[in-house]
Length: 252
Ligand code: MG
Image (cartoon, rainbow, N blue to C red):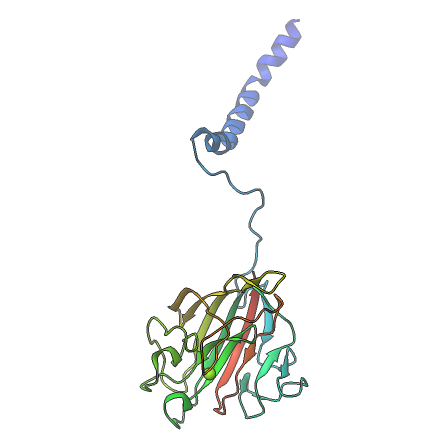
């Protein structure tokens, strides 16, 4: 009996230390349930990724090497835009679309309007980023170049003007970071939920979670035509040699 008591006494300090450690470790867990209405942590830990750029979970659409992720809209064959020095340039061969389809996504791309200024209004440095091949975020040289406000750079074409004009001068690289949620359609083709879009240009918020009203186009009231959830992202050839680089997308 004496031996057992001696052993217990000897191990008491380490036992106490263990209990202290345990209580410290459990303290946040215990306290979480303690207050009414406090939100417990989600079951799953956020996935660990390398932020890059590009982020390690991004799909690279153009890294400066080639346009193998893209096809030519005219004939469905390989994209024919010029690729040189890490840059893809619009060259009059028509728009290009990703081979892969995307629904809800985060899209990053960089663009530059021509350094040599030619034309005016919609004819100066015009291109565009079409989410799901239908909903255009306008690309335009809007640096000292007047046009209708919902047609300038960063506009959801003919639906929403950008909140501010933060365009850099012609020839300089600019970024678009787009958070896009695709529209949802019922089985009868009825619109359940419109698309929403947030756009940052050069790090500045220019579209704040606006509801897209339908396909963008030059004329008439925008309207939705039902389409599958995953659709290509397209870049417009508007006849101006706009350049693109560093294009990546993350599926949401
Ligand atoms: Mg355009």
